[in-house]
Length: 135
Image 1 (tube, rainbow, N blue to C red):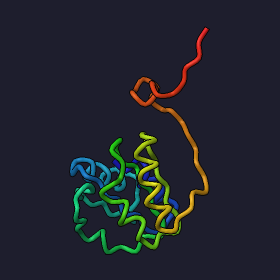
Image 2 (image 1 turned 90 degrees about the vertical axis):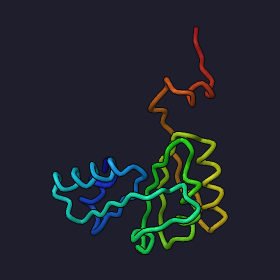
Image 3 (image 1 turned 180 degrees about the vertical axis):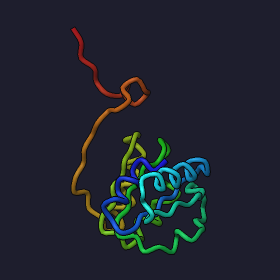
């Protein structure tokens, strides 16, 4: 939908968004146009595929923001780790897949420099894994 891409596009020279669902790609392109962001390019791709294909794979990424589903970014994390990106921001809703994917990044020379945690959906299964205090 462009929830991250459109605001970022107002701060940088170019944004490339890659999403698995074509309807969301279309929505992101529409949102970018409505917000006057003509420096965005959106692509549909199966990011869980063994082979990543498309024009977007030839871009020279300087910074990357990942916002994968609960299953994490296993299909694209090697691509990200081998990119020339100076910074990678990973928005995760699953600590286990974040840890798995972070291991790949660390093994490829990246360092964890900042970590923040926020439970935006306390009613979901992730919340049940955290201790709860009551009186």
